[in-house]
Image (cartoon, rainbow, N blue to C red; front, side, top):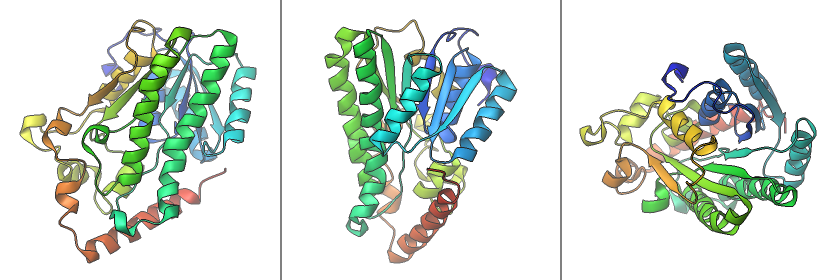
Length: 304
């Protein structure tokens, strides 16, 4: 991210304490940098302890501030409880939560196994709820206000063929957001979601467009259509939206799902359908092999 393109003044988020799940890489890393640049103290969690530590060191080296890495598997509710206990003990209550941790891969739905479905749903659906529930009930018990923002997808509106576990899970988070925005609004807790279009990151695109680099993957997704700006998203654009929803000053925004995709979801018939519907067995076999290789590389670096 080009931090010079953040549209907010330095110090805007001073005093904010935010947890970013999946904060060691991808979109989580980018948003963490923005929050720290603007003065927030940020905790990042994930399953790859060395990646979290590298990210924390990199961001603090660039901007100063405080980034605390915590290895935690958010599929495990007890592990989340231990993590949040640790956060509360090292500085008090959080003021915000960014539900960013995710998993995804392309597959014909008839080829999915229950294990493959759970690999996504246990992180995105259950994990996001577990973290939100744990932190939210502490805010309520302590009379604290807070902001929760979750990363979803535009597929919550038009479906996600060939990515059904993710689309289902993200739709669940979207409904959780709208439901709790009403239920918990009386406590001063607000919830919103961001639905990004193509903001390619290494981990995501290795599984959504295996064998292609980010530029090729984005073109295949429809981002090259001139009616939607003819480009992919720029990280500072996503980060500016995340700051708006997490920082003081826009507290009346509640229960909203905001797309940031140049209008692409209005054009497409849903996710990756146009390209993937033309694939045969050979293309799917090659994709499975590429995704398996990416998963094995990630697994080797996990510490939880």
